Image (tube, rainbow over all chains, first blue to last red; front, side, top):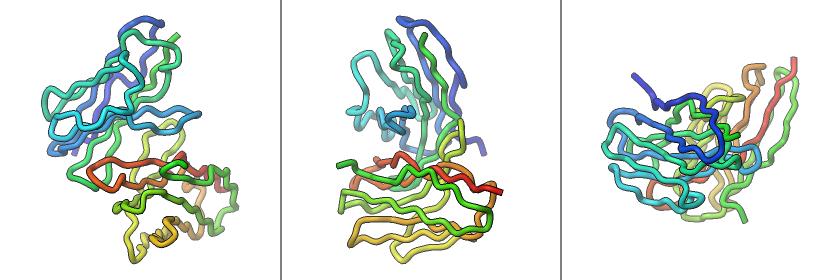
Length: 113
Length: 110
């Protein structure tokens, strides 16, 4: 069975550019999570969707970040404009039902120059 | 106080040793607990769930102490392949949100 699929695996872009990260959750999972991981801050939850509806976006750093989930099989995380401090590994995860463990994608390694 | 706290280590142990990690959590309403493993430059992967009565999976044993609000992971007969970062995960109490610890680094030495 396919796991969580993220794209791209790596992204290097210049400050000020728009960045779009994509995620396909495991089929049948009703919850989707976007995380950011850095050495300094560890794994941080950015936003969480349940049945395609954003439930908690309190972890989104600022207005430059936005996330959508137009259907059960696709989500995007967008940064516009990007800044060097956004450089991190961004993970998408999904889970089947409440309180069940989350399954992570391979992550997107983002570098903003 | 952080929702989940772990000793970051690093723990450097010889092959065959037994090593234990603890993790404390602050929300007494938390109901679900997990240990994840993360290899360098990889995604976190579920290692095992932690049940109230304690549970074992091969060389790995997980324990939960609700009174003191901590969970533990014991690894017996350490293998080189156990070298990784171990993340403690605790749910928020309601809904489907989890807190991840910053991880404990383990290196098993030949």
